Image (cartoon, rainbow, N blue to C red; front, top):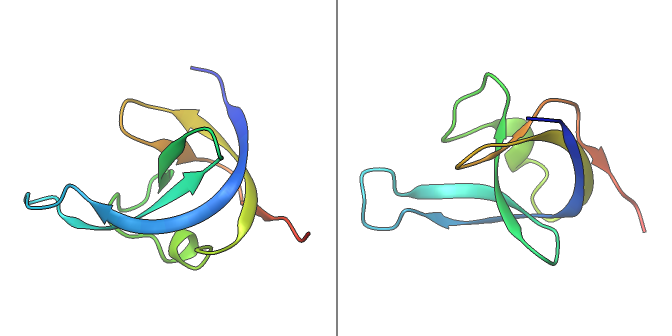
Length: 80
């Protein structure tokens, strides 16, 4: 799978409610789609760097998997 670049707002919302995977997760809302984020080689439930981006518009590169947009590079915060 090829690496792609996405731009959008990082949001936090509940994932997998009422299951053993239930947790607050970070997502990238591009306006067209919402992708669950995961930093490459990081804990899938929590990554401080991604959580610290909540509320910011960002540009990031990564790969789409079945369940995640896996972020490989440092996200770039976009200042409007």
